Image 1 (cartoon, rainbow, N blue to C red):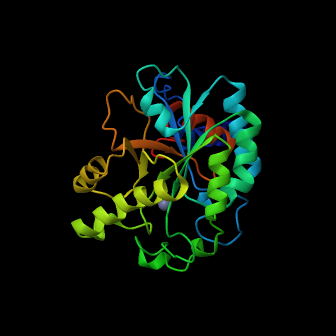
Image 2 (cartoon, rainbow, N blue to C red):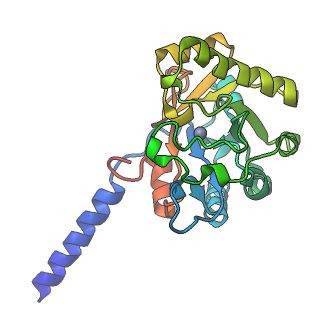
Length: 273
Ligand SMILES: [Zn+2]
């Protein structure tokens, strides 16, 4: 009998260990954690992309934890400008695409704890279904129906002085599928339009779907962005990495608090992700 309890306990322990890789050492805390979010809203049962939906409750728990444990918040642009002197435990909160809940749900929480964020905005984001641009089977999966920020709402975010607006192409393009001219247009005009429309500097870029090639990192540099983030998972020293291929830490709507805590330490929840 005791043997079976022991075996059952061992199995649970092994499962827990491979799922959470709790023994892995934390990545040097002098390297900033760049967190990738999309929406701050409750999951929709039965829908795709719930990993992109972090509940307001979990988002507040995460930001409160960062605040209470001495993390320093920066926008992407600030982190790049101050990369030589960033203190230990620096964090950049980023949101991709430009969902309305970034204003209605995330901003009040960011304000409450004095945290900043960078939002990568798709210029032509209304009534556009980019779910299928990478995998045709995802078309119609619901991202089109998610409310996006109106231009006035983007202005309200900027007025909070906590938000940087970065670019994410005009149409959430799959850059790998575009010609050189099309890619230049998507990458460069998105910056120009944001700067003209919102009278703000647009220094930061995020590759849609994390898909890009060397050609695109060159375009991003030529269009005078100062930095670009990918969806590659990792925590790196900004003084020693390619500033046009900066990895991030993916925060999923499916992460419990332990997963979030582990991701802050190592960038990953378990061995692989
Ligand atoms: Zn995106």
